[in-house]
Amino acid sequence: MHQNEFVNLITPFKDKIFRVARRLLVSTEEAEDATQEVLVKLWNKKDILKNYNSVEALAMTMTKNYCLDQLKSKRASNLKIVHNNFTDREAGLQQKVEDTDSLNWVEKIIDQLPEQQKLIIQMRDIEQYEFEDIAKILEMNETAIRVALSRARKTIREFMLKTHSYGIG
Amino acid sequence: MELDKLEILLEKYFEGETSIAEENQLKDYFSSSNVAQHLQQYKPLFGYFSASKQQEFTQELPLNSNNRAKKRTTTWLSIAASVVVLLGAGTFTFFNYDTTQKEDLGTFEDPEVAFRETQKALSLLSQNVNVGMESIQYIQEYETAKNKVFN
Image 1 (cartoon, chains in turn blue, yellow):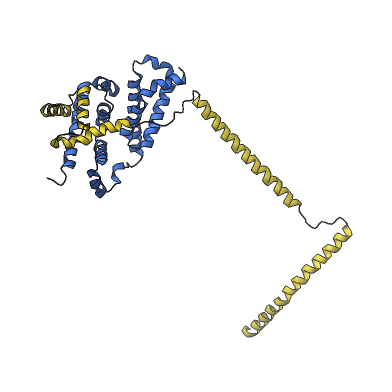
Image 2 (cartoon, chains in turn purple, yellow):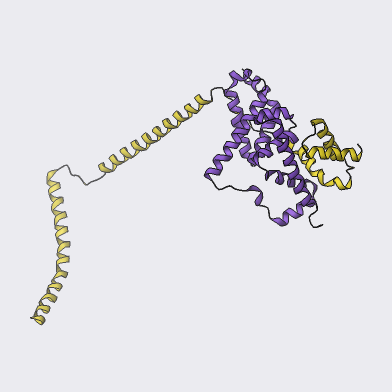
């Protein structure tokens, strides 16, 4: 496979890889590294890629595994740095007023979800994969995914209601 | 879309039972300007989903087919460079060391002159030693005085 062909093949989903990686790893730099890593791995596999019926699903599975590995090794060796702890509370309250900042608020809530739910929210609500594809990528069955998705969405709703009615109730 | 239908859809959404098309309906509704008052709280959620789909991967890909070979050449290059640096530093100090040894030591060709010069140098030395000796005489004085007192 030629380099151009490969680039054409990955273009439709390379941003998706990046977004999934960012969702899991939080930091943009790390997500960029992860994306590069996954794409280079795909490139090294280029000769056997035609054996897979969906390269995209393969790439997503690789991304998921790579990011979870990263997280695991980081947790084993370092203290975890919680990225969303740096802003102080006062600024957070101020931000809620603004429209764009309530988007940040959503991001913070999603960051608190367990990894698996984060992944499912990312794939369903942001990338809009069908349940069938998500099941393939995450190697789970569809029912489990629906349950986890519902749980994640409800958790987000709960937090949203809490922040929305802050100071009222 | 009617409000009651939308609320049913929203409920389905939180149960994880909506299809992609229905979710898009929800997204469209919440991105429009006339969202019902009691549903305002969901607006950022759907707004966030649409917004975060805009993020893109802009990094360049290091897609050289011989990635590994490149890595190997860089390691060899660095080894070669360090060898060159070491050799350079070694020869530099070697030659410098040599020249300092050969520098002016006051060597004479003629033995007569050499003899005279040596004598001169030795007499200068002994004179200076004698200067030292004179002051030692005083110490000798102290020694004798002390002996007188204590014996």
